[in-house]
Length: 231
Image (cartoon, rainbow, N blue to C red; front, top):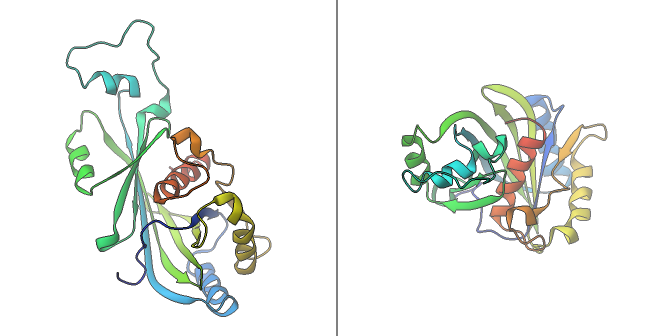
């Protein structure tokens, strides 16, 4: 596995948005604190992407389109505006690259092959690309943790910094959040403006709240982007 790539799903992750970060200058100061203060090792470059697709149909209508000419039953729920949105979260690079689709009011999280998005792009009457976010930065590792940090660009505009803290020995987020907060306090300025998805309910997406996987991480990104109106 090349430097900076994601290992197979392990441990627990916490995704945060540093709203008032100042681009390359903030990333440089953060890297110095991680490498010197935490005595971490540089793993390599880190990239992450999220793309938003929008459908003219709501979720119930999309389900009905699977059966040609079959209208929705009388009184069937019509769905909501967020039912019309689908997020594609791309984690990792090269051989470790994986795609996760989060859709229908964030109630479904599935992993799919990269070719799946190409198929969706051909279904222009069902899904149209709306906006994209890209993170570019670096990954660092200690004895039992990995920190990924990068500048966030949404539609070409700088939107602060995204930080992902991954604690490897334990996959229960409730048992690791305190340690992650300690790590965060050691690398960020005390007045940094931070938003996170700490109050996320994984059960809403049929995910185990006590055992994290990369599906949980993808769900965190989408939750944070929607909560903070980034995408």
